[in-house]
Length: 270
Image (cartoon, rainbow, N blue to C red; front, side):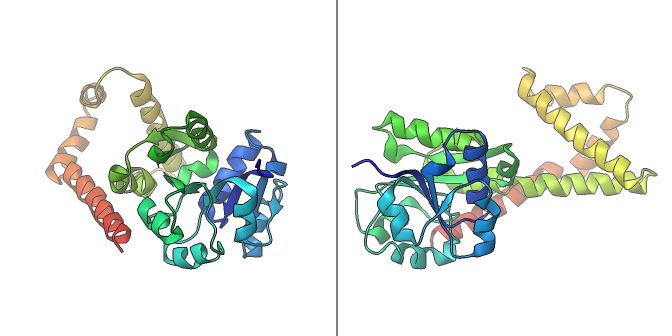
C-alpha cells in the first residue's frame, strides 16, 4: 500500500534540520510529503517554516512513511527504537553517528529492514557538505539508491562507501570541518600578530583556502606539483614549508585523524 508521506523524520537534530531544508528548498520533496516526529518544540521550530507536518509520535511516522530518516543521539538510540512500538520501517536512513547497521537491525528484530548508514558533516547546513553513505542494503533497487542519493545531493557531495570504511569517513569527512576551522583560526591569529586587522586576516585566510580547494578540484596537477608551484613565486612560501616539515605538520594531521577514527570505532563497538 502506498504511504501518505515520502519521507518521515524521527528526531530533528542538526543533521535532520539541514537535510529537511535542503530537500524542501530545492523542491526535491514537497513539504506536504514530509512528516516529522520531534519532542522538543524548539528543534521542530527550526524547520516548521518549511511547512512540514509534525507527527504525534514515532510510530505514526513509520506507519505512514515510505522512507524513514533517523536522527537521534547515539546514547538515546535504544529509547528511540523502543518508541517504534514493535514495528519497523522497511527503508531506514540513519544519520546516527557511531551506530552500525546491524545494531539497528538486531534491535528492530527483523531482517526486512534495509538500512542506509550516512555521515553528513557540518557544511551540509549550507549545502556544501560531504556525506559518506553505505547503501549496500539497497543494491537490488536502483530507485531506492537514486532517491537516497538525491536526498543528500541536496546538501552536498555524496561519497558511496562500504560501512567498513565509515570510521575513516568519520575521522576525515565528518570531523574534518573542525581541522579546517582551527587552521583558519590559526591563520587569522597569525595575520593579526603580523599587523593585519582581524577582518583583513580572516578574509585572506578564508578566500585563500576556498581558492586552493577549487584549484585542487579543477587542476590535473598533483598536490605535490601544486605545492612546488606555490613555492616558486617570491621565495617566501618555502620558508613556511620548512617550518611545517620541521614540526612534522603532516604527522600531526595524521595523528589527529587517527585519534578521531579510533574514537569512532570505540563508539561503534559499544
